Length: 276
View (cartoon, helix red, strand yellow):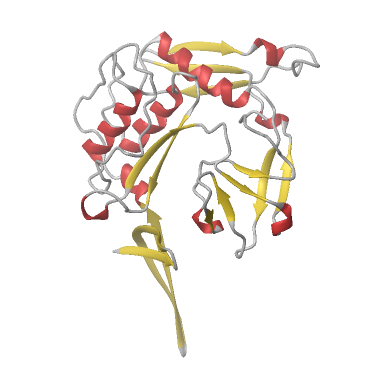
């Protein structure tokens, strides 16, 4: 029950076959197949016994422990997992009833030592025993991994939206519930340095169990949302285009990995910061 997609360079994608469907009429039948990447396996099982993470546990260890405990389809190889240089400040909340994916979704907001939100992905099997899928953990990128030019046929739609501005974060955590508020006063201030408006982002975190860790959650979200920056809503790239990667190679559009920055050379020459 596995679906694999290849191109001339080898394996592009591998996933689980989740559903088969058929439309049948006189003289013909059409089959439809639905497959999901192995990230879906991180939702299959939940912690069925009381489970906590100790104070001082590295944030990346939360990810690898949840994977090892609940996701047998994912390799235990950690070569794609970055060190966050951040640890839990206190014993975590009990994660009984949560899946590995839910634990990771909560842990990623604690961020790294630079208050950068974390991102996790599961990539096609290329490492580990039996070519199992691999967990990747990275900090929110601040430098482009790929670049392409308008002269290659790329079409870019860009907007600047106040709807993406949040300069106050309200973190709900613990039981009974506690609330921690974090503000970006510069962003809330008057123009030209600020936006002259305060917009709140409420979030609930079911992993953390201390004010310090709640502050870190708020700060990682402020790092991402307290500035309005141009966003490419859509980049249309011809299938024949070659996209330069940071290693000096060229990849096809379908091999560009999610969570990475793409620089359009004519529009963002020298862009290095995720806020730009």
